[in-house]
Image 1: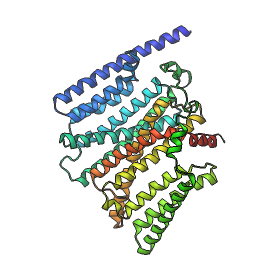
Image 2: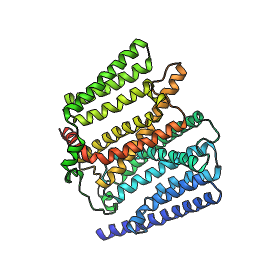
Image 3: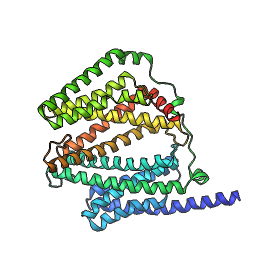
Length: 427
C-alpha cells in the first residue's frame, strides 16, 4: 500500500514537472519574442517570472522540483493577453493579474520548498502583501528605467499628477488582484493539508528558531548606543509637549490640517502607555522615543518643513517605514514563538520585513491619494497630500531604506518585545 502511494506520488511529481516545464518554455519563448519586438517592459517582467519559477529546480538541482503547473498557467495567461492585445486598457489590468500570479507562485514555493511553515490565515495574508510589494517594486523599477535609461514607461507623455493618478489606479488593480490570489492560495493551502502536504513538501532542515539563538549584540555596543533611559523619556515628553502646542496653535488659527496631524500624532504617542496599561506590554524608552520622533517629525513637516526642506519628506518616510518594519518584525517573531503552526527561519525574516514594509508603503500611498482626492472634491485642506509621481516613487524607495534599517537592528533590540508579545498571546 505504501509503495503504491509513493509510486503514485512520484508519477504525479513527474507529470507536474512535465507540464510546468511546458508552460515555462512557453514563457521563455514569449520573453524572447518581447525582446525581439523591443517590448522591454514585458521582456523584463516575463524574464523575472521565469526566474521565480525555476528557482526551486536550480536550488535543489533537480528538474522535478517545480511549482504546480496550474499556477504557472495563471502567469502565462496575462502574458499571452499582452502579446495579443498589445498596449491597451485590458493589458494594464493583465499586468497586475500577472503580478499577483508571480506573488502566488513565490508564496507556494516558499511553502513547499523551504523550512517556512504557515497556517491558513498567515498564508493568505502573505500572498496579498507579496502582491502589493511586487507591484510597488515593479513600478519603482520602471521609474528607475525612465530616470536612468530615458525610457517613458511611467510618465508616458503625461504630467506628473496624471501619471501619479494612473499609478494609484494600478495599485488599486494590484490590491484587488492580490485579494483574489490570496483566495486562490487559501483554497490551494486547504486542499493540500495534513499528511498530503507533508508528503509533497520537499524536505528542508528546520533552522534554529530566533528564540533559540543567543542575542548577537555585545554589551559594549549596547552601552555605546543606548542613552540613559531617563534622558530618552524626557526627550519623548518634550516632543509630546511640542505636539500639544502645535495642536493648540492649529485650533487657534483654525488650521484643519495642523489640528488633524497634531491630534493624530499626539494620540499615537500615548499608544505605548495604553499598551502597558491595558495589554500589560511595556515598551523600552528607546522604542517609545523612536515612535514619538517619527510622528513628531511628520507633524513638523506638515507645518511647513516639507515645503522648506526638500529631503524632510524622505527623512520622515524612512523613520516611519522603520517603525512599520519594527512592528512587523516584532509581531512575526512573536507569532513564531507563540505557535508551532508558523515558523519563519532567521534567514527568511529579512525578506518578510521588506515585503511587509513595501506592501504597507503601497497601502499608505493609496490612502494618501484617497484623502487628497476627497479633500479636493470637498474643497478642504488635505491632512495628507501627494505631490506627483516622483514624490510617490521616492517615498517607496525610502520605505525600503527604513525597512533595511529596522531589519538589521531588529534582531538587536526587538527580541525582548517579541517575547513579551508572545507571552501575551499565550496568556
